[in-house]
Length: 107
Image 1 (cartoon, rainbow, N blue to C red):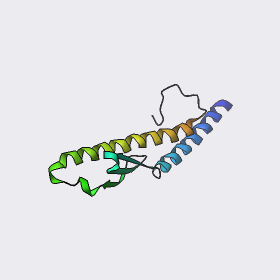
Image 2 (image 1 turned 180 degrees about the vertical axis):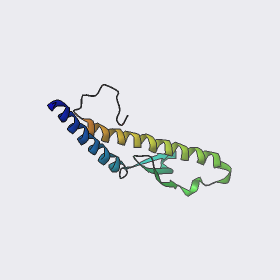
Image 3 (image 1 turned 120 degrees about the vertical axis):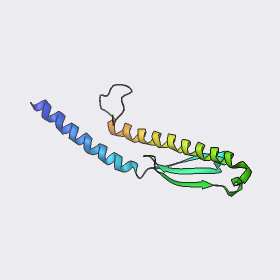
Image 4 (image 1 turned 180 degrees about the horizontal axis):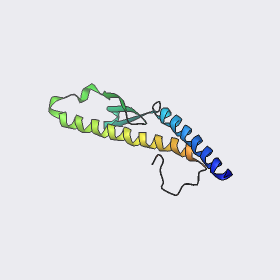
């Protein structure tokens, strides 16, 4: 019975650390860019877009599709950086746990 109590205590501690990590991810901001930095997107590690910056020289009516593609590319760049930041934080949290390779938390 002692082992079960210890496991339950560890699970509760992990749950608390997970909740703290989720709150922390709200404060982690990443920026993605495209067009050599002409379009920038800032978002949280949870994927909430906070800001979009577009160089005024890109605002040409005839080139609307190019601008749309650049915004899309910047959002995707920021999103991949947000996912990497979240995985990095998660790796810190799960360091030392005997998790199978490729298993991600939260499930």
